Length: 532
Image 1 (tube, rainbow, N blue to C red):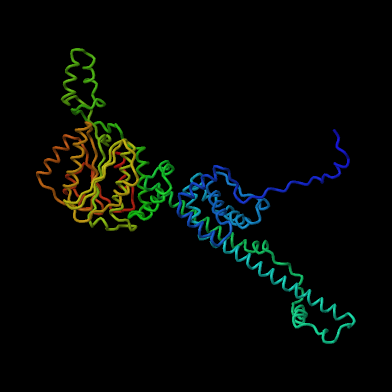
Image 2 (tube, helix red, strand yellow; image 1 turned 180 degrees about the vertical axis):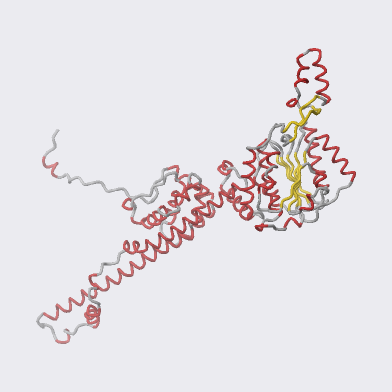
């Protein structure tokens, strides 16, 4: 029913709705905020930074949230200035400057979707955030001082004008009451001391002072983002160099990942991370050319039990019932006629064992400042990747003197923990050099593998920079084990060409031997990764 005219007249006219104001500069949903809270609770560094900034600046906790979300969100959007609560305009100015920095897109390549990396970005920008907050606070203080000075000047001018008006009126008061006060006289003189045109200058406001501080804030933001992007890039490269799988990082708790990153940065071999990464990349490329079962160049006929190389006349025996038993007997005795070949051997099936010399002389550096130890450890870590890729066991044996040996086992069927890899890479025994101790341990490990799993054809890689003797009795046992287990021995003489000469002990022990002089060259051992 229609309303009475008296009632309708009392209704106010409709007004446009007041736009909603926000305390967050970066648009975020509930799940984004939960991620921030979880990360904040896990990071002592974030909590300490928040406590420090909040003690000196208003709403610093909201600023840290915005900086985190700008790095973490897949498609971050910074609100318009008009959408912000006035108390959060400082945060908006800083976040907008960070998001507009030239390296911001590069930074987000490493941080988007990764709470840990986004948190590290906030901490990497901590110094710049302090500077930017100080700049805005100083600007606010300058604006307030200017406003107080303007108000004082206006009060003095008002008082002067009042006194002047009083002097133009007829004197109706006693003479003793007509003298102007001392303050009024000073105020009357103030306009005369003011330069011409000064009263026309615009008044200083907080907004104008912050705008004037803008170039300095943007410069600080550019530097902060560039520094954070560099830190994120270096940490990602460090993780790749050490073979840390991205999926493993995503599953790793925040504190554990932070400790891992710190350990990688401070590791004895941290400065050689680039070399380790290049070794691993080279090995990955060589796997594409790896020979699995190639026969090489045919050079004749030999005896054995490799069914992939049986000559046709032997296979014909399988077609006749009366000769099948003969074929089976010759196969069991390893006396089938096979094609003999010359060329790259087939890859092994047993464990890959890297024997790494850690005597004092391995500290010596070569070209580029790379030490013998760094080259040997980088090669061994690439061999670990090689074994893991093929599903083979890997064993790292560190050795020096006869009584100094340390064994690290990495079963092929289990994930390789980065902590154990670092223990292997960082350990160094010192002392002299003994071949017999590590090679005896390697031989026993392959014999154990043969007894347990009937696997043969393991591969031993001897990485050393020294030449030493072995006893005749030991050499006889070594050759017997080699024939029984079918393992191969690869030798690398690191910075010791004499150890790789034709009549050396290392040459007598190895099936494949080479010398390395340039420790920056990862391709000196490339053929190892095609054969192993």
